[in-house]
Image: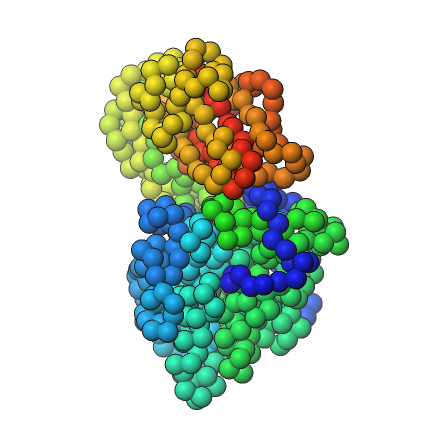
Length: 583
């Protein structure tokens, strides 16, 4: 969302938001509402469930793009161009007619991406869905607005996959230059003739739809155009409110000014959540909806997955209500395995999660089976059948005489259709538990050996004591905006009974707050966050932190510590004696 001068009641809150795990916005991962009393009866109820996992995968791509291109995706930057290429590539592969429109009047040269599903309804009947693709220079812009861009992209891909009959043409757009004054959308609207503007029967905008302390807001909530968006959120009992904060601040305004009916979803930016809203939706009263708004901390950690999922499914509901022909689509589902590969020693076992999703029609029972396992390897599922949208634990076990090598196991889900996914397993010739401690230079006494770290992180400075010896890893402590990392690749043996990750952590801070997380340390293994600590966890000495690492048995994973400080008052995260022991 574009920043504007606002009243004191919408003042920017400097506190970092709670992470997704602490956001008080409960819901299941896949919400399919009961039919709302006033909702359209046929097409909308047949809308597909949009996989929030797939949406989050798009967010991770946008984060990687920003990380690889100077830390941001601002219009005119390499990060923005890479974002355009990512979205365009996905759409073209799905069969869309995609146009890049260069905004010649934008402050920063960059392209709008316009995609239309080919064929179908007459050209004078168009429903349009849009989100701004650019961010600000301060950070990667994940909630603002990779969130809106990602829910839009996944909806476009699902529409292409299902290819239903359409009563209206569906057009998607990703805008350049929103942060400089809605420039890309304004350029697009101004490029249309009066007749072409009249073809567009409604424009829906999605901007910041996963705010960590967010609310549920709809642009022009009482309008006819907003009806399907409101019907879906009403069906979840959310009681959405008018998007007062966002009025005139996002791309729907460009269409509204041209006389085109508009609406859209948002979850809030720098305005403050009221006590009544916190009672209704959860979260923290008196704090901003997105305290990482236009800041470096607007990363994939700054995402409320529940709100993201509700927004994605609400968009699907609106598309089906507004543009999809009557009738119920064929029941169908998908199957996926995570992780997609693993290694086991003879006599050991490993697990993976088999996830299913309803991709069209209604949920159904899916029976799970596997083929392709070599001699001496068995594959089992718990449970052996699920309702689409559910998941099962797959266990791959190797006997002492199992055939060694790498094999592709086909996981099959059988219901009204047959869907498959592939898991690659490597069986090694060794048996039992090799055991031992696998972290190299665990006490940092050999300096930066083995570890990959930001400059100055591994140190023997006397300003912070080590837990043992003289060296430690010291992230933060600068009292200024800074991100530092510490990582090491670990090969975790298979076949052991216990796996324990442990480290000693000391936190001291100059922050005086007892409620707000200004500075953070995130601990992750294999890209999965294990824990997040902040200035609120300060302590006078070291505290040992331990985690069960059995999920990584037989894998090579990266252990990462990431420290992020805001613009003032230091917080030091001091790490020492890091071990991962298998026995």
